[in-house]
View: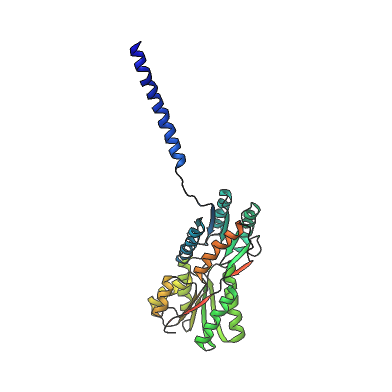
Amino acid sequence: MLLAALLLPAASACRGSGASGGASAISGTQEVKIDKPALTFGLIYPMAHPFYEWITENAEKEAVRAGVQLVVKAPDEANLEQQIRMMETMIRQKVDAIAIDPVDSDALAPVIDKAVENGIPVICFESDAPGSKRLAFVGTNQTQAGVRLGQILDRQLQGRGMVIAEAGMSRMNSVRQRLDGLLTYLNAHTDIQVLDVKYNEGSDAKALSDLERMIDDHPHFDAFVGLDVVSGPVSILVWKAQGLGRYALTIGVTEEIHEALNNGQITAAVSLNEAEMSRRIVRRLLDAVRGRSVPTHDDTGFTEIDSPDS
């Protein structure tokens, strides 16, 4: 009996230790605080490209300040079906808001509308989808950006000359607006002829072959205009390879474009004020989910950057 009396507290202590250990482990897990962002925003690009990496870098800085998590998606190359799938996935994941740069404004309108109908506010940036239920557009007035390219050509060519141009995706709203602004200005104010315009559809390889073909077809051209973020960098390669000294203008600024401007391979670039656009994307999404007023068009403007040699 004495032995049993001595063993009983020890057994109870063992059982108590096990229970206490388990409770302590659970309690410890519950007490570990993981600071998760209160909001999650989706960000969808037309394609993977250094230009959009620069936008992501700035958007993420703004998101950290706002305590927001960004989910960033981009097709390897411009692809409508992939953008649609990315939108559908974000709707299923119930992100709090979405910003998209649509490759095809009309085709993406139904899935943008679906997101909005599911309580997810959507804004467009760089390229708009005005026929959708998107809340707002953040970015440059692309028609005016095209006009500025025309003004630069006018100044460089003194109102006369021959030009070849490469655009991006033929169904992208921003590309059509830039081209319209360029052609409208040149036709109204100059004697500059646009000899050829090709669309690379977001492909580096097609942009390269297009440009080489246009140079072969029009060897006496005076200037080249890149109307999207793919065409400008491709023209740098061609200018280096062929030792061309013709004027080259482009839209969108990356480190590569800055370097080409300093080297004289790019005559001038029209920046879309990318850093400011990045910050405003996050701010406007935050305004939307918090019920604040959001301007239908948040114009971020543009900036002309000239080569020191121009």
